[in-house]
Length: 437
Image (cartoon, rainbow, N blue to C red):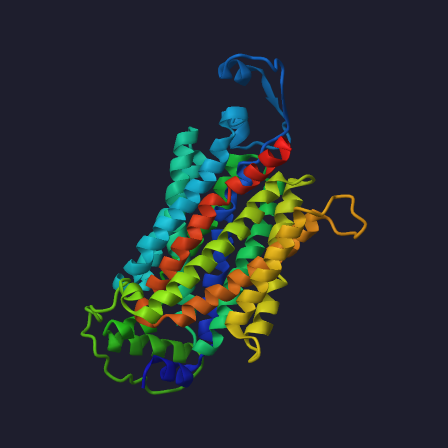
């Protein structure tokens, strides 16, 4: 029997798999804190300048006074006026790092294994996260965000694949939805943490510290049985499946897989990221998915990073932009499992609704008679695009075979990160256009 048949025998989603996937799902809280760090750490406190017509930037620095309700990189390094772009630049560097990480880690984990690549990424993610908190200058801070992005993006991608490959295919939608749901909850928890910790360095340090615990506990994770089998390690895959069976309380003498064509350690050398362009069906599928991932990322992060620009309480806005995603996931699970809807129609429907909500925010005045504010529409758009993002994540992992699944996800995530790189500048461009009018 193959791995899917073996999982039916040992249990597709037993107590052992619930523990394994639950651990990796909780990891998304840490991933969310790193991804959204700049929203609070880069927030602009209220300030005033004693002499408005100062001729030199150095004079402005000497005469600027920030409110003392919280600190940020803006107040520490005076990133205002002509230096304000550096906040968005640091955010874009994180997403540029995510892009690099997706390109590197996907093929590497297909070749070297999920677990070692995941552990390496998490280790250096924690190291560079602490460098962020201790950065002596903006240049070091920006450098650290780039490398946090590389490690965070690659590690998160591999951990998502692991959550899928530990369980049977019928549970992929559930584990994928839980992963994205926990990321949304992580945004809200980060906002709560920022509310109580007003010093940006301490906030960055505390938000990064759970990564140490996750790294140490990750050594207990087994390698993906699907990857082991696809690379010719049949005996090792049988051992992992037997461990899962024991953890699920299944009393079976052994798990016997049919021999894989690949020789141990070599895998099938014909399979690589170039397969995505070699076969017409995979190429067409990949191009469409790359565009959908790009759009989802641009809208999702454009709205999320805009939370710091909204009027009102900074921490409440950030929390709302995280919590508004929570209803998206039961909606996803409802629609994608219906025969009349499925993955494709669900993705299209959520994207159309998100697009309409965002477009209407441009034309709806704040003092309208419909009891609906542009901010509320933006939240509805965030909910819808989150649902679309969740569905396409699951859909993509199901559309690629095991031997190129991480490569396919990596290429799609690469397109996604281009949207993320542009997203930090969307609120600034919109605000500039509003000021010009």
